[in-house]
Image (cartoon, one colour):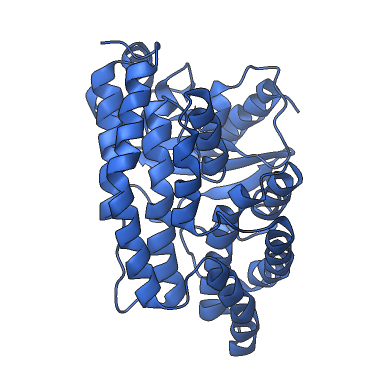
Length: 345
């Protein structure tokens, strides 16, 4: 299915289902498809991001991934209060991309259309590109929350996501979509475009996968695929990521990783493999049996060991490595902002 067809299906879902949600105040498309032409093919390993605007507090759990008329949709909530002014959106690197191009699906108040007109015009202003880069840089540091009461998989998640946000600092300088699963692929392409490839191996090094071989990554993914299916069968807790560990989420989490590996990007697949296994481990420890969790943990520990993570002390050590790398990451981001002709004063 092409992007236009998928968007038409998503619009039908918003009309038939989302408009009846409590506090519904509008909807718009977000994510990487906003940068694709209407006739581009939507890969089977990609979802279509739809943001549901609510007047009031954002529900604790997003709707998540689901299939609607053969389209994989990922629906999330955003509070109307976060979209009150163009300045609020322009300075937020997660929100601004959703209004870079015409993306509004439903706009009962007229606020979203007016917002998109301003954000689309001002998106590439240097002051806003820099503000979004600074926000991403701040999140690298503030994202670390190694709570002593947290489980080991929760602590791993508190390390791996901030480490991965180093790629977002550079992507936002592009300015490119700060994609989630494919962030290392995207930053690799951007660095090559600007002749800054010397930063790429160190970024992979922060994750611990720079030296991983193809066969090794394939083994970890094969093991994860089995764990994923078990976790998807037993999950009951409403984790924020619950819809990702499901039959609907499998094409992205498992097949999407296989697609990267088949394309010669096995190291770039490791980030989402590690994230997904951490989530599966959290599910099994909460909703599965002790036997399930123990069986999965052996493979999980092998994966983490390959990344250089054996203990909580390793997580703290790697946090310091990320913080030490930040000045170099920021220097590259500034160089890209300066060299990019699309960024204007």
